[in-house]
Length: 281
Image (cartoon, rainbow, N blue to C red; front, top):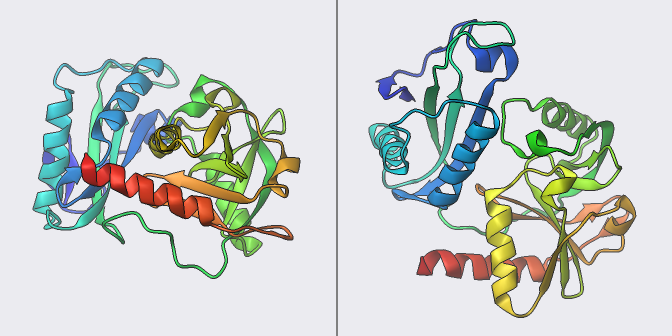
């Protein structure tokens, strides 16, 4: 069952050819993990969505409170029989129908789609290899829009096709200044000794929810130093570790970049600290 503006419908087409999210990518979304009815990092997701809607000049409905949207998420999970499961949720917000580039109305639609997630807590994926390379066909233009989770994901789609064609597990994306900004499906962290770097938001990376959590874990650890600073492609092969973060997987270590192989010692430690934080929250 899909939740469309509060109405639960069967899994069937529910948007028209005039939907602005479909026609122009005039839409935002949040990918959320829910474990046994607990929405992880819900406050962060909610405020990112509200901030993104303001940046996109969407008129936020009066009923779009944190409590209202939380209730809608849980309602959709429950009706799909997933209340006692780990769930991946996509909350999509668009500007309705009508108009060309200029919207005719100020309507806001939302939809919620849920599916069962693979695991309850965050664990390091058990893979023999996780190989990445740079995706250099197209570049991210640094700016506020590139930090939003919008439906405009052409680079991510083309990069994913490139990765499959070249037998890669993922690709790292560059901005127009030729700095590494993120992976196709998450933020990037680089480890050298006890020093950990991640690209700054100003470089054009997604303002990731898990990125924020990992930075807080590192700062509170007392064992590592984290720095938000630009990362050159030349630094990748000099790193001790590279890892990708998103709210569904948590941490995905990169095991190989070109001829360089990486360990996962720091990744494992940070992941343990993250899970401890979740248990205490």
